[in-house]
Length: 187
Ligand SMILES: Cc1cn([C@H]2C[C@H](O)[C@@H](COP(=O)(O)OP(=O)(O)O[C@H]3O[C@H](C)C(=O)[C@H](O)[C@H]3O)O2)c(=O)[nH]c1=O
Image 1 (cartoon, rainbow, N blue to C red):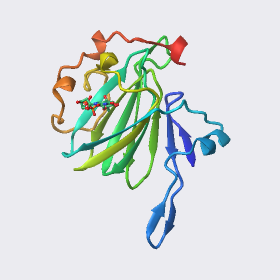
Image 2 (image 1 turned 30 degrees about the horizontal axis):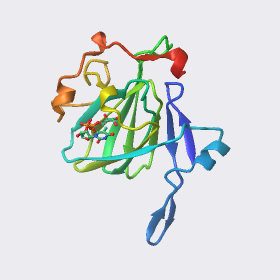
Image 3 (image 1 turned 90 degrees about the vertical axis):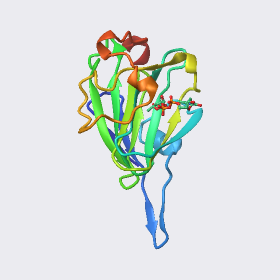
Image 4 (image 1 turned 180 degrees about the vertical axis):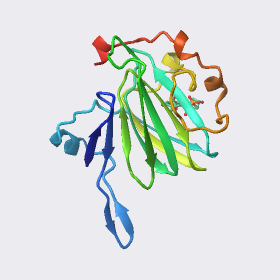
């Protein structure tokens, strides 16, 4: 397991080992013991999610669940390729409003750990891209929120309007966003 920090403290890139042979490969995509032995202790995961985005240029985000159902997410790409983005929205954080972006793909096997207190979104870079991610709290639609993908200054590398859900088209601009997270609680 390779563990890399990012420019945002707490956001990590995890890359599990792949054991290749003539059939293909085997990989432990999640192993709490391996991470603990490397000094990384993530919260318990209670829900796994999986989505398929058919078109290249599909953008899902920027999403969060507000407390008391804030979600940390461990994200991986199981088919295709995507740009995965996390934005620090913890009030009082020294990196408030700052973002990191990592390309995740089936090929590179990289995973992004996005702690609670961060917005999460991704843009697909190939057709039929599938994402699978582990969440530290259950789905709570009443706590679901989103911020406009193009209001944070993220360099998505898009050349055309992305494919968006109606919810994401109507998302609040970052300048009007009232974060429910504090650095004190989610550091
Ligand atoms: C998130 C979620 C959704 N749903 C249902 C609700 C809708 O009927 C349908 C699609 O939901 P939504 O449009 O919110 O899905 P995404 O746009 O992929 O949103 C997700 O993508 C971004 C990148 C995230 O980080 C979040 O996990 C989540 O917000 O699935 C569920 O039944 N359970 C769930 O946990």
